[in-house]
Image (cartoon, rainbow, N blue to C red; front, side, top):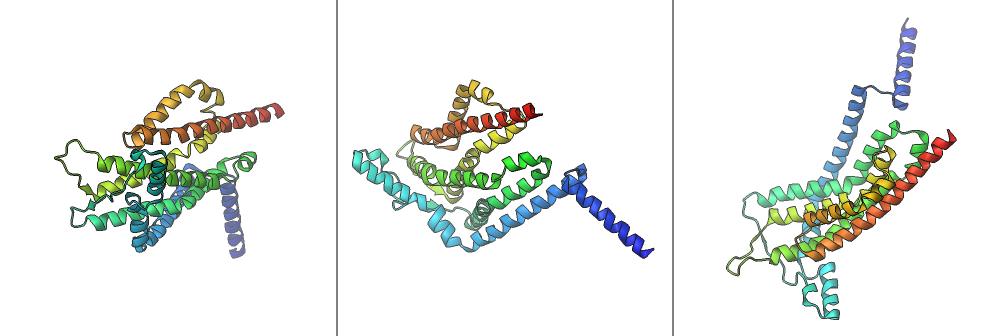
Length: 288
């Protein structure tokens, strides 16, 4: 009897595993699976956040607070360009922006918050991998083969967006917003929370925006977007991208153009990706 009971348990486990592998889980099973993916992603973020918290000098002195200094790479390059073309407007952040903290726990709370943001950025490949593992069982074999490298490309595009925002948009934003004044009688006293909030929001926003080709791929897969649709509403999309550039950048034309051009480029790549997806689907229907 004991042997029969053990055999039945093993059979039940095998069936459950097979059912799970085939992507035929119930709604509660999917929720349980999603919960563990979220838990693993959260653990990765917390782990890297702890590392970032410990490496305080590197995160703040060499990364977060660096774009406000004249020796920052972008500031130096624009200064040289301004000297070359004799345009003083390109010589940004030549006077270090002074930052203050007006709350007794302000620096400690911003230390924690910045560490969490840094932990998410560093752990983003792990987060994307866990998300991919969750949706992978719902795909067919051919779809899985076509989607190979999805985690790499998603992480790569997100990282490119973060780097783009950090090296180009952040210094321009600091210079424009930090030196802008409505009257000479008003002195700018930049709060630490405001400064870090601007830096992190810009870098995260550009990171997400650079995922536009990935969104185009999956929306084309489910039939919500087609290349014809994207071409028809191209002008409308350009207007939306211009508005989006105005939202995630300071209110100056130069910064908006620098963000808008990559968005247009990514939109055109999205059209190419959508065209390829639709063509593959049509070939599959013709074969059937």
